[in-house]
View 1: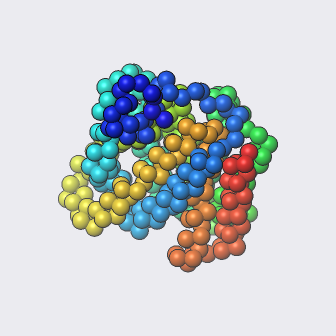
View 2: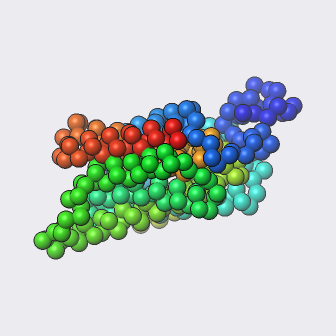
Amino acid sequence: MASPDASDKTPGCAVRGLFSFPRQARAPLSPDLPMSLQAFALIIIAGLIHAGWNIVAKKAGGDSRFAFFTSVIMMVIWAPLGWWVGRDVVPTWGRNEWLVVLASGLLHVAYYVTLLRGYRSADLTVVYPLARGSGPLLSSMVAVVFLGEQISSLGALGIAGVVVGVFLIAGGPGLLRARHDPEARERLRLGLWYGLLTGAFIASYTVVDGYGVKMLLMSPILIDYMGNFVRVFLLAPVVLRDLPTARSLWRTQWRFAALVALISPIAYVLVLYAMQDAPMSHVAPAREVSMLFAALIGGHMLREGDRLARIAGAVCIAVGVTALGLG
């Protein structure tokens, strides 16, 4: 991946080449190419990691202050790699690169805050699947309509399989039945609203980060790590408003935050690397393989209900991801 010029003859530069995208080393990606096996494998691994850290975050029971703790620890844990990858690259960034970092950080914060509000107002089994299902669908639509990517018939069927699977995991036809309880109807309405809004933010940051990786040839590691500084800056006022409560939460949540900080960037960076070798319209829906792992873990370990619907949804997602990989 590293460019064959004189600067790449040292071992240090050779290693850094594995984590960056030299601007003259890659030919433009043809939008009608199918997903490569490497990209497919990266997405599967990322999905497993994503499901894992979400379970950890759920057990922590945190709010936006937990997100701040995670971001701060992330800055410390990943600082050596961020410095190693970015020490020769970041000083060369221009306005467009910094705008991508800023936009990415803003959208990730908006996504997280919206998701938390949805969880406070509605059921997780409504908000999360809708967010994860609608986001890739919107990402694919943007990639096809505005970025000129193409998708085969098999890939389109794969997207449909992912969407249907997420719908079944969320509750299936039961979500569409009229509720006699006004309070339950309102919770369902809010769940649908916040789920779709969260999905829109997922689609937005996927497109922004994908643009940085595919068009500006930015390192996925640097997009995620540098965007983390934006997230810390935006979330800091939440902590500073009530420091005693923040200290109390830190004592009970720092272990969970440290684990999330350690593994969560790996999942998303793997997705960004997959975008280097596969069309965004394929990568975005394939990320929902995490729903497969979450459904299986939720049904078995957490003893959650609706086993049949969730198994059927998991099968639809698995078939959809396979269709995307082959298409």
